[in-house]
Image 1: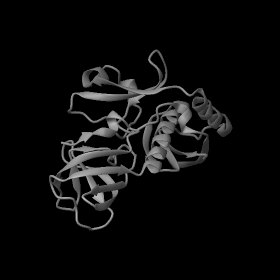
Image 2 (image 1 turned 30 degrees about the vertical axis):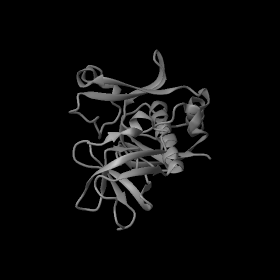
Image 3 (image 1 turned 90 degrees about the vertical axis):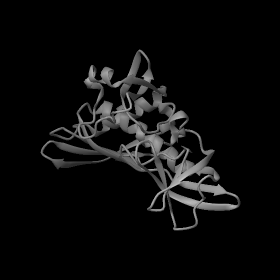
Image 4 (image 1 turned 120 degrees about the vertical axis):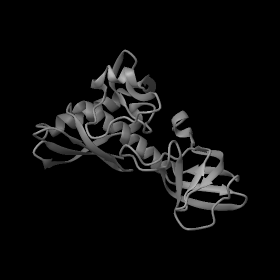
Amino acid sequence: MTTMLFREDPYMRDATSEVIAHTAEGGIVLAASIFYPTGGGQPGDSGVLEWQGCRISIATAVKGQGDQIILVPSEPLPMPPIGAHVVQHLDWDRRHKHMRVHTALHLLSVAVPFGVTGGSISATHGRLDFDMPDAPEDREALETALNDFVEVDTRVSESWITEAELDASPQLVKTMAVKPPRGSGDIRLVRIGEDNDWIDLQPCGGTHVARTGEIGALRLGKIEKKGRMNRRIYLHLDC
C-alpha cells in the first residue's frame, strides 16, 4: 500500500519516503508518494528520486496492485534498494499544468451539459468527448462562459461520500464510459464553488488547483465529430 500524498496536498513538490518494493519490470514502490499515477485521463507525474548521493529520473507513475503506486524510471539505472530513504522531487511545472487543465475540463463538462464519453489531459490542453449529436452552435459564447468561470475565482475543494450515497445520487456521475472506483467504501467528490452554491460537483480522483482563477485564460480548440452521437471538444491553456 502506498500513501497518496498528492491527495493530502496536491501542491506538495518534495517529500521523503522509504522504498518498500521493486517490480519485476523495474519499477519502484514507495511507502508514500507525491507522484500521481496515470488514471482518469490524467498522465502520471514525472520527477526525480535522490538517495545517498545517487539520483534517478522518474518518467511516469502507474497504478499497481491494490493501492500501490509504481514509479517508472526513465532509464535502466541502479535503483534505490528496498529500505532506502529517498527524497522525491516532482516535475512541478508539468504537474501544475495538469492540475489547471483537469480543473478546466470540469468546467467544460458544466458548460456543455451532455454525458462525457471520454477525455484526456496534457500539459498544454485537454479534451472531452460528449454524447451529443451536434457541435455547440456558438463557440464564442462557450469560450466566454468558460473564462467567466475562471474569473469568478471560486474555491475548488473535496469531500467524501459512501458508495451508497453515490448510488442515491446517480446524477453526480457525468462520465459514461468510466465509473468511479469502488471497493474502498468511500468515493471522493470534487466541488467547484461553495458548499451551497457550487458550479460543479462530481466524483474524481485527479489533482486540481485550489481556485478557478489559477487556471488562467482558456482557449477553445477544435470540435470534431467522432461518431453519430459523439463530439470531441479541445480546450487549451492560453498561457
